[in-house]
Amino acid sequence: MNVADSDWLTRSLVSMGWEPAPLDEARIYIVNTCSVREKPELKLYSQLGRLAEQLERDPEAFVAVGGCVAQQLGPKLWNRFRMVRLVFGSDGVAGAPTALARLAAEPGLRLSLVDFTENYPERAVAFPDDALPAQAFVNIMQGCDNFCAYCIVPFVRGRQKSRKSAAVLAECRDMAERGVSEITLLGQNVNSYGLDAQGDGTSFAALLRLVADIPGVRRIRFTTSHPKDLPDEVIALYRDLPQLAPSLHLPAQSGSDRILKRMGRKYDSARYLELIAKLRAARPDIFLTTDLIVGFPGETEKDFQDTLALVEKAGFDSGFSFMYCDRPGVAAERMEGKVPLEVKSERLARLQTLLDTLKDRDLASRIGRETEVIVEGRSKIPGNGAVSWRGRDPAGRVVNFPHSGREDITGAYVTVKILKAKKHSLWGKAGERHD
Ligand code: SF4
Image 1 (tube, rainbow, N blue to C red):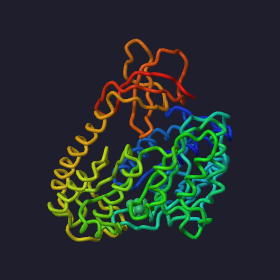
Image 2 (cartoon, protein in one colour; image 1 turned 120 degrees about the vertical axis):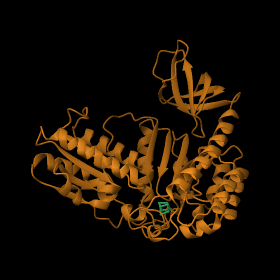
Image 3 (tube, rainbow, N blue to C red; image 1 turned 45 degrees about the vertical axis):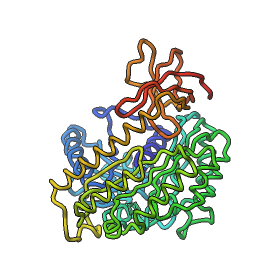
Image 4 (tube, helix red, strand yellow; image 1 turned 90 degrees about the vertical axis):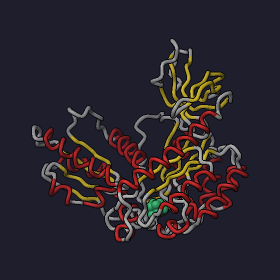
């Protein structure tokens, strides 16, 4: 979501006549932040420290800080860092370009855009060039109402507000007319799209069908899904909607029913595995990934074993695992039974070993198959004399391949026969191109 926000902000500023500049030549710096874990927050402080030294030479240059850390700290940031003149949260992104223009014109002014709005804050259309890259993100909602015990998101992104379906579809149509063929619908909890007070009666399943009807849209992805809200209607679309990419990121977080309850996730491991079975029945080649937290307060070795068992049973193709860390204000911060760091590290290493084995197995299973790859750009892997390219198969796996033509094939769809599995990607031989 931060990548999508940064992309829009860049397009918007370029449409206003501003130019991107190298770090040592810029006059205005925009830092977009995340506070889901502690590390990115600490990175912000070290980055601002470096910028403070750099900007001593140019008193008119300034910094804008956006995203979740800006939402959390607000004007406290400019008390600590004199050169910060704008703070904006996720609802403030829409107003950031106008605020930046004001700040550039009025030295000495400082602005804060951290109030939550009641409705989804629509952003001005910003397409500086006629053509766009083939892949794009489209926001469908903002915020979250779930308050999972470990999560800071509802505090820094506000309560859930769905964007009107007409606005979502208009943006998708505009993008498709400018060459976008793969759209990723974004929201903190996309399966509850339309269920809040701002919903307009269009469910997430209905929205997926409407996006698929737009001429030029060849692949649709979405993220993120909460297992408690994934309805059968959406699962059935994996069977019925060819444009829906065969992949789903479904965060399980734990395999222990006791820990899932403490996390406030409102499903148990049996329900989770039932969803996995239904998804595989609807689309046997579906690529399933997940998020898992180790060392949530109170997690015992038995709870952790339940997580390993869930991973084995679900047979994920890949997964992301994290050590629990306290975030300010969340319910788990006040829970008893904090797990020592060395125990969390040891569990994380065991879980990652298992997830790596499953990923290797998935990549190896692709060898010998043909797949359709959307090309994202040049690959760094040498192509035996030819230029090599990097793209993604329908499931989202990275595929590299050499291509003999001289033209830029970014955005094209190419059939690739998979020859080799590497650690994180596949290597293949290009066949027919079909744009
Ligand atoms: S559903 Fe996701 S974003 Fe919302 S509180 Fe839970 S973990 Fe955070």
